[in-house]
Length: 218
Ligand SMILES: Cc1cc2nc3c(=O)[nH]c(=O)nc-3n(C[C@H](O)[C@H](O)[C@H](O)COP(=O)(O)O)c2cc1C
Image: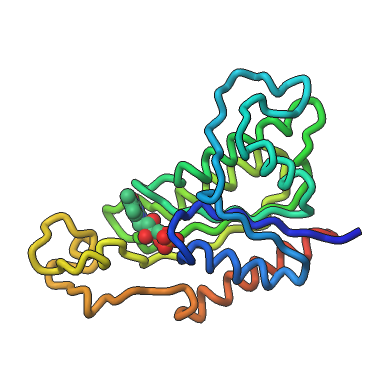
């Protein structure tokens, strides 16, 4: 049997931190992988109609059906999301909701290894700020555990400040640059951070990939 690990990215930005972090973990699994970018597809949220209970197939006619099938056929799943307003992004959330169709009677995701990657701005443990990374990882972990999957672990990739891209580091009173790094912080000081530049993040992503690969036969 050919082992296949499915990676799902909720980030709509081309070649984003979320995408690349996921691709690093996928490459470390040692198996054939498939990378899916949810913004290339149409996946609506669950309508809670319970139309899937008899058939294990969602009644919504969009790409959620095909992607659910891919998740079912994959030997393991890595879900990578980002954290607008400190919760998991809506594309990733909609995808996870649609996997509900696989649950009824057969628990079709039961026992499948799964892992989470979450990118955010707020670094772990920053006082007074919502712990976006923890909350994002928690959302994916809770989903995987609820579906009876074997949750292998999660990696947070923080310090990616979106406000850095507008170029206004002096006037803007609403910049997250200032609330994280202090009043005098400038774009030039903080810079654009990429997961590839952090040896600790790279090691964590590669370990996650290896752990998922090992869990396929575990
Ligand atoms: C609308 C919006 C809201 C955001 N809110 C938060 C937030 O509340 N907490 C946080 O840590 N990051 C927040 N971010 C930052 C993103 O989570 C972060 O930049 C992430 O790395 C983006 O993923 P990407 O690099 O793959 O595009 C926000 C970004 C956007 C665009």
